[in-house]
Length: 266
Image (cartoon, rainbow, N blue to C red; front, side, top):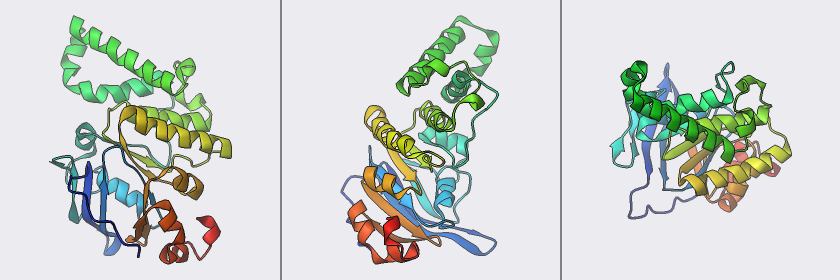
């Protein structure tokens, strides 16, 4: 197993330690730890069934860990529900796109923006001047995000009418609308062609640099992971088998074995 570098003196933005989760006696994740710094761009890879999405579900409150700790800044997250975790500053996309297909592109983003204005729902129902002003702010912010990702010209179209690659991009926009400190991307390149994947890599870097957000990426496209990630954690059967830079991961014998010895996959 690749040696893990000693922790820096400063606490990471997202500090995950010793996560364990079992289902019906079957261990899905064992002893998973990850220090993700501010503005870090890290990858989480492994064969199918390695436990990657289970880790994301633990981080975002879909599952409660059997053991372990999750901290975002100074706040412990283990045991909170997904809404509370989103408010704390962690947002995600999904392997299977989960847009509201019948709603417009703009409405999908506005709903995400409204996550941070839920406490104003009573006043919104009363249609006060303040609530109307806030609605205008949400709309302006949503359009601004769509423009940054070149989707503003499709703002009023149903989300389901977008090409697949644009739907993936819209899911990322919607996640960013919640103003996260940490963004989890679950196979964002799935179903994309090579040109779209290259553009996605540029987009992910742009997100990190523009929004000052830390990013953890699950992805099966090893070319994309090796190109953009600064550090990579590799899972196999729920266990961490390697942690290191892209160069270290490519040369790690445990990783090559986990991918059936096919070194050309890395």
